[in-house]
Length: 421
Image 1 (spheres, rainbow, N blue to C red):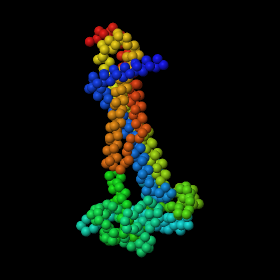
Image 2 (tube, helix red, strand yellow):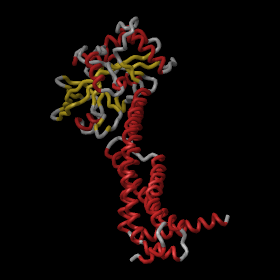
Image 3 (cartoon, one colour):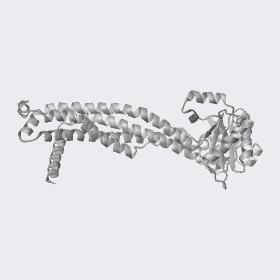
Image 4 (cartoon, rainbow, N blue to C red):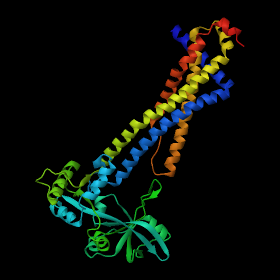
């Protein structure tokens, strides 16, 4: 017990001397700390950005109901991020058309709701105001059941709208703000291209992604959309979801849809690959997780360089400090300080400097992450494990790179040290 008490006393004394030394050499200490600040900030910020990217994908797929599957002409994650293979599939595969929608609906309607969406772009006008690059979406009346799309006021597209190809639309909040000055547009009309459409509903605000608004869109009945753009001009996205009184797993739904699509495409009795893609919320999140994991595997080793540079700065500064304090160390040894006391003092000083740098680097990374999160919709925040990592890394760098100057100080001959000027 007395041995432990003696050790703690010596440690406290070393810490006091370390703090006095740091206060007495503010410029050198600041330069030493800066190397660690940069290294730790880089590591923590990379961790925050990668976790933010993963969270962003999870939040983005929240609009994609978990029990819904989507059929696309081609999906990027099916090709493991190979952009060229994805582009080739987009050009080679047949489009998904309203005939495919009707086939799946007839085959699956006893157990599933089936719907679709097509996307194009047109300018939207009202009076002298024009918005360009508006996303025009042709949807089936059940789109609200198949996605988490919500109506804030008015109503959505109905079956009657679809059956009679009515020129009606549901608009996003940007349309309300820019073309109607924020007032209620229900019952009024806008022009898309050369045709007028009555506004029957306003969608809930969806916000922005990386500064790009998600509310600049107009929904039309799919039949009206095809009347304007042509029935075979664009590939559709199909949505399939079990009806309310049916319970199917996502895997079961996916298998039923895959079989139906292979029958439709004449592939059911062949060994040919699917010429369509099936997308689920889980598959998107898994792909994003694999992608961020790969990026982390590449980037994290690079951040070690920043930490190594910071460690070298710490070592050089402490070596310079030991050289400047040779006479002080000689006096301490002459008064009875042991080799262990000197070693402990220099190591404690080094670890203290790196810990201060680690906390400052953590604060810097948190400030940058907060700024990124504020100016974009990427949910960047410093994860708890990154805080622990910053502290651990700071201590490790202090110990590893403090050993050389500490051993140099501890090995000084007291007689020679006292002669030093």
